[in-house]
Structure formats: structure tokens, C-alpha cells
Image (cartoon, rainbow, N blue to C red; front, top):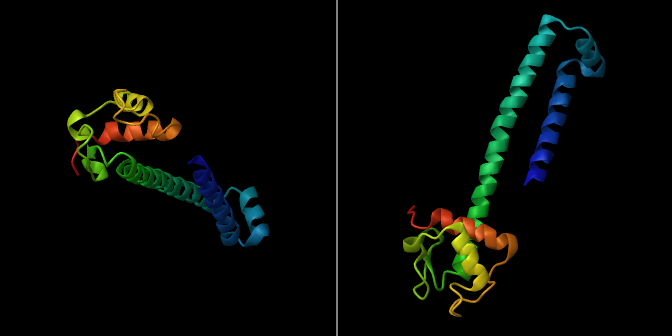
Length: 151
């Protein structure tokens, strides 16, 4: 997740440098402007500084929110296909009736992780290890955060 943000930040910096060089009259003008701190140069520097930080302040949170939304949708689809046959969870569009209704149960992250590892309560009705590792953790966090919530 950090890789795309750094890539975007690098291109923003490149664009700002090119913009500064272009409005300064090319490389020579940019050198002259950087070496003579006139009032106009300070105003330009301040403006560029504000634009960069405003751009970063808008771009990075937008990318983080969009990434989290995509991740949540992906986890909901995984729940519907892997767990939805047996369990009910409104936020994932799952209406199973064999296993417990997770909207009513409202399990904690740890309870979901244990259920995934052991296979429910360990009585053999739910297969153990349906999801493992990071995928199991992500699913447990998703279920615990949306169980019992509508919308």
C-alpha cells in the first residue's frame, strides 16, 4: 500500500520541479531565481509549498480511503463465497442458515480467528483452516467490525 503512495509522491515532486523550471524561464532562469531571494521568489516558494502540501494532503488520504474501501469490498466478496453459504452477515450480503447468524452473535476479532483456525467450535460442522494467515486476520477484522451493523 505504501509503494503506490511513494510512487505518486515522486511524480508530484517531479511535476513541481518541472513547473518551477518552466515558469522561471528555463534552467538558467530557475538558477537565477534560486540564487536571488527576491520578494517574488519568496512568494513563489511559499505558493509552491502550499500547493504541494495541499495536494499531498488531499491525494494521500483519498488513496488510503479508496484502498481501504476496495479491501473491504474484496473481503465481503470472500465472505459471501467462502462463509455465506452457512452464515448470515448483512454487510456481506450473506444469508446462510446452517451456522450462527453473525449479525446476532457479533463476534470479536479473536473469536472469528479462533473459529477459522479450529473450524467453528471444533465440533466438525465447520472445516478448520478455511482461511489462513493474513487472509484470516483480515476476515476476522471485517466480521468483527460489521457484524450487527446495517447499511
